[in-house]
Length: 428
View (cartoon, helix red, strand yellow):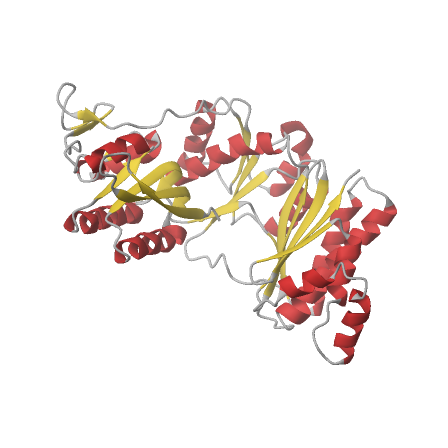
């Protein structure tokens, strides 16, 4: 699922006197899954007494009507307290969506941070609600201020998209026209085997896949693990009412998904983003795959087998491959036993990434974590092995597994609560 990152930063204007304000950098999608995060962030800031909020929309690719309603509401909160909520660096697509819903007559849209600071120093006098958006609006061409929007980057020119749906219809025609507007290539088919059979010829950057198509899980495994195009992005369209986050015994994840009913513009934004991203990623990575499994032995074995198959594709010595698998296996065992305590309802999530210099496993459990700083500080000690054995004899969580992972990798690092471990091995 597309994430939303909200980063507030305290700043002051350059005026005399300077006025404090909060710059809120946003990155991703403001949609149904991410709306609560967006609203909570703004609510926290306004409750803490922040009256001037400048929302930087440069990296916002999509906003739905609920997100737009939140902006209007918090603009009113700021205004009642003598402040302003200002939007800056808004892309044309996002700005047009807002304009059509009337927000541009209620909330100030400015070019950049400098303009926002000047408006705050001016007490809001430079802000005007009389606006026009590329001729879409109520003001005509002479009086109203034009909405400043970012100049969008050139569209992808070599992307290839494949749409897999049960049958043709108006939806498929719209998608085909949209891809053609990007000067990309488009293929339509009705089963996953056709995609597999043509991978070498089509070399798709994106596969948009209707979940009603059978055999999706084997297709994802074939594409992400066994094919020569593992970086191909997969966007799955789920039917209404689907519980996408439902735990499964074992799962290879798609890159992103939408659940019907969805805004067609969001599908376009997702697809176009992937058509631009994937060709660039191919210059940086050769493999990226995310899979998860529950903390029961049968599912863990599937996860370990998949990890081993991924490692067999690496161009490394047998010794390095054996060492990395030993570290990966220990990480999975620790996540299940010490993190999830073999709770069958808790998952282990693995991300495997290969770039020209290294292979990396990220292993995450859903447990409470542990004091990883203490144990990591011990691994370079010459007596670490003996101390770990003593802790195990006393019935405590040891450190022997951490020591093993450290010895078998080039970099070992914990993050979060200690429930995420990063295992790296250099490729030489």
